[in-house]
Image 1 (cartoon, rainbow, N blue to C red):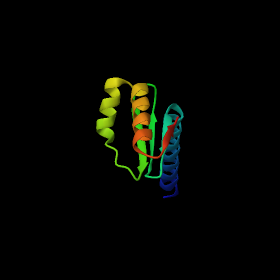
Image 2: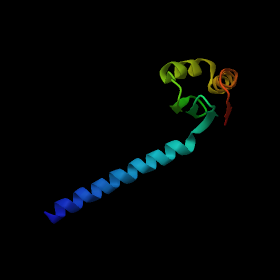
Image 3: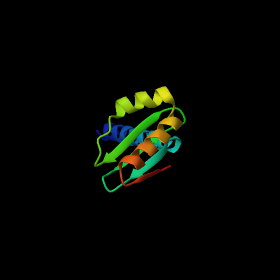
Image 4: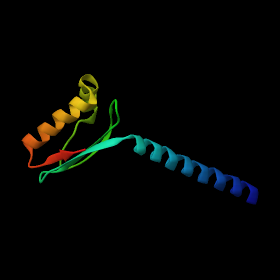
Length: 96
């Protein structure tokens, strides 16, 4: 019984360490653009080739469609266009 619990405990700890390592590697390679305004905030996470995630407060954001559009025009062009849209349509600005 003790041996089984020991094995299960080691496996659980190993899985937790693996998940943390994957998270650290993934977030270390990504960059983010933070857009803040009185109407709400959006953070867009990206790497050199594509959008990889986002978080938002106060805005709706169709990630699937925006990701597809960014793939078509390129990440740098998308971020520039989104930053311009954000500053023109809200009281805020975006920073990388």
